[in-house]
Amino acid sequence: MSREVTELEVKMQLAEIIGTWVAAVAVVVGGIFGIFQFLEHKSALRVDRTMAFVERYHANNLLVEARLKVTDVMSRRVEDINKVIENPDMAPDDLAKSFNAEVVKIVKEESLSGPLEQLFTFYEQILMCRKMELCEAEVAENFFDSDGQAFLLTFYPYICHIRSEWHNPEQYEKIMTYYIGENLEVCDENSQS
Amino acid sequence: MMLKNCTRVALLSLTFSLVVACNSTPEYEEPEECNPNGEETCEDSGDDRGYNPCLVNNKLPACQGK
Image (cartoon, rainbow over all chains, first blue to last red; front, side):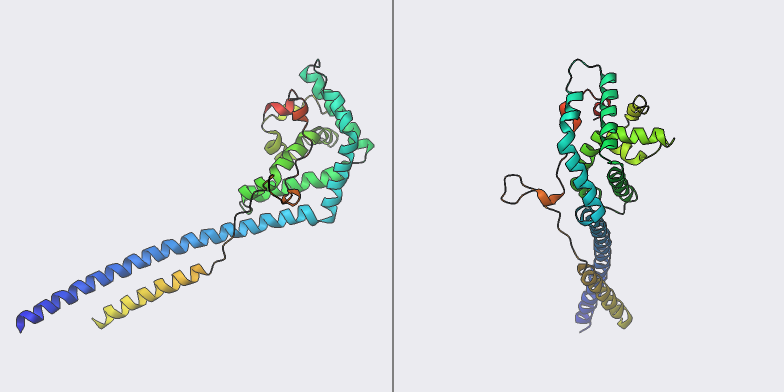
C-alpha cells in the first residue's frame, strides 16, 4: 500500500512539473504571437494610410485636374522638349541650360505653375508620411515612385526656377533629394533662367 | 495543490484568450502587381509612367545620379 502511494505521488509531481512547463511555454509563445500580431496590425494601418493617398491621387478633384492639365500640356509640348534635348552635339552644361529654359518657358506659357505646385506638394506629403513611418514604404513605392520620378525629372527645372525666384534654396527639398538624388547641384547652373 | 492548479488553469486561459484575441486582428493582402500580359488594364494601378527626359538623353545632369 505504501509503495502504491509513493508511485502516485511521483506521478502527481511529474504531472505538476510538466503542467507548469506547458503553461509557461504557452504564455511565452502566446506573448510572442501577440506581439507579432500587433506589429502586423500596425503594418495594416500603414497600408490603409498609404491607400488613402492612392485614393486622393485618383479621386481628389484638384489633383486629378492638375494631372490632366500636365498630361494635356505634355502631349502638346513634348516635341518642343525633345527638339532641345535630342541634339547629340550639345555639351551637358548647355543641354541642362536649354532644357531648363524650355521647361520653364512651357510652364509659364501654359500656366502650369498651380498644377505643378499641387503635385509637388502631394509627392512631398507622401515622402513625409513614409519618413514618419505612418505609411508603408513598399506600397507607396509601387504606386508612386515611377510616376514621381518621371514627373520630377521632367519638371525639376521649374523647382530650380522658383527656388531662385523665392530665394529659398530648400523649396521642395524632400522630393528633389528623393527623386533627383544627391545630385542637387542640378539647380546651380539652371536657377538663373 | 489547489492553488497551483488554479494558477495553471488561469495561465492557460490567459494564453488561450490572448491567441483568440490576436487572431481577430484583420489581415491585409499585398496589392497585386499589374500584369501587362493579363486581360486587366494597368490604368487603375497608379503606375502610369509619364514622360522621362532621361530616356531621350541621359546626359542631362539630373540623370547622372540615377
